Length: 357
Image 1 (tube, helix red, strand yellow):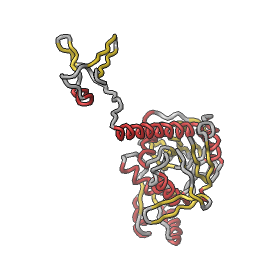
Image 2: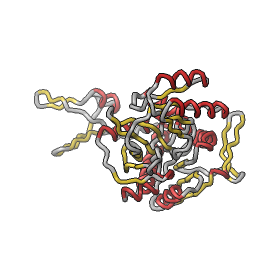
Image 3: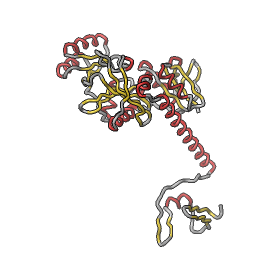
Image 4: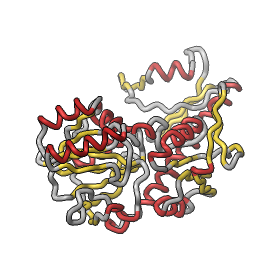
């Protein structure tokens, strides 16, 4: 089986690339900056260095929010030929904090109270009635970039004036005091495979490792794990990081990251997260490929007019020491009371075949 990793070739991506080689027969390292998508009437083609990209059993795409439209186009084009752990629309949702929060709200996942405004005037009315401190965020941005902290109305109002000149949409979010600590959980498929607490440097509100935060291993309780997995599912990602605050109200999700860094959490937890990801991609791709073979065999049987054996799980009906088979068995076998049958019976096993077979 073969796999392609589409990425910006970060250290984390190279860690995953190395792990993939332990499972797949062929592993391709594709630089997203060398990919283009050709759109035409009735077709959508992915080109790598100007040539049609070969077909892969699995394609795992990673990249920053700047590449969200391209990542969505790539996965949309490959969705019918390869296993993709992240849905096409997820690259739009996951790289936009507003769309992420809308998905969380739809699936009733707990999060801090968040406001989106249409104008500076409307924003100032919100600033007048909410409690401080607050966070102000750009919808796009990762690694803690585009996140601002305002301790008072005056500070928030000054930030608002600056933001207005940039003509940028932004979110206003309640600040949850955690002492500069948050939780990062890595979700792979339907499990949290690693989790850590991140503590911000003194004087810093952002706990991101890239912003100088320090990580330490942390075991999540069952409810917080459930919240993390449901967050990934709500945005359509089978691989992602979920950032959570522990508040008096319980865990609150603040962000999902589709291309998380792995060095910090691997160092903190001593868990080979890259291997967890690679193993999942291999097992899922293998299962899909084998399922496709079964479907192909089924079609061949149908074309030949041959019905493959079907497995039925059922309780047997015993009456007067006799076994009555379920009606579905009669429908499938099409046995009649006029034909002779060969019955083979032994303890724990029974088979019936037509004598004319």
